Length: 304
Ligand code: GDP
Image (cartoon, rainbow, N blue to C red; front, top):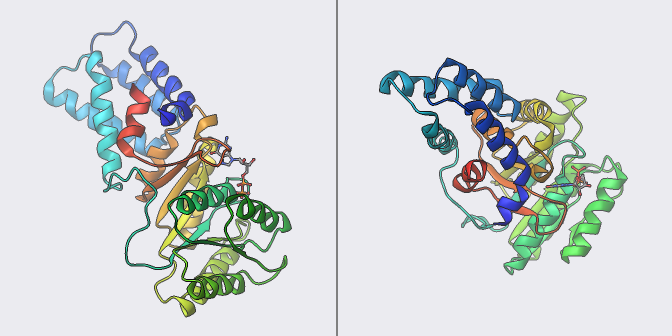
């Protein structure tokens, strides 16, 4: 029910737009499909993914010869869940660390302001609550504020943080953090990175170097490269996903600020376009306002 609450805005908006699109119509015709296309696009599902969904529905209409508008909700929900199933295999509902990697190393990437630090703090809190030993690495050495903010979260959650002064080499911070994690027998390492996009080659080089240096301590690190995106920024989030996936291999996504947007469809579009699973969603500024993404719950929250 917290998910429902957090996604209230996305939900009511999508649902009411959809209801408006089919109001007074009994069957799904070209006009309804046009309206549906608009609802999906304005909910930030993205044009490509929207067309994919519309095409699937058109195929069903053509095959079945008739589709009542009252069936549309159910069919749309099925198609969207199906689409998400291409990237979301599991149905995790809890914050779990895969077995085998100790420490489990997560490199967190994303541009400034998307909620990267907050997401790291919230994640640290979740793992800490499970009794896991967590260490943070302040790898965004480009901004003093980034180091300070991560320190605030480390204090709040009561986990150690490895940091150096502003301007130092992020790869060196990563090296120190992993070494310390190994020495202290930590379970989870969350490493922040600088999120400058203005120079793609720099970003690529920097993230590449951080990775290579990490691997000197733990050969298969990082085990997860988590890209944080602000769900309220629509096309910007798509653009950032494009840039980061070009710069490094992104293995999972966190989409934040879904509490403040009427456009939760970005989760569906981004996951589909980039074929990367959304692992977490941010639904508020509080320490507990991070949830493990569950495709069924998410799709249902749109339609119930
Ligand atoms: P960073 O620059 O990417 O590290 O961004 P921060 O973690 O500092 O977050 C930027 C702002 O977004 C802060 O005011 C956060 O409280 C806020 N924020 C982060 N995640 C969420 C979320 O899921 N919902 C809302 N409403 N605000 C969020």
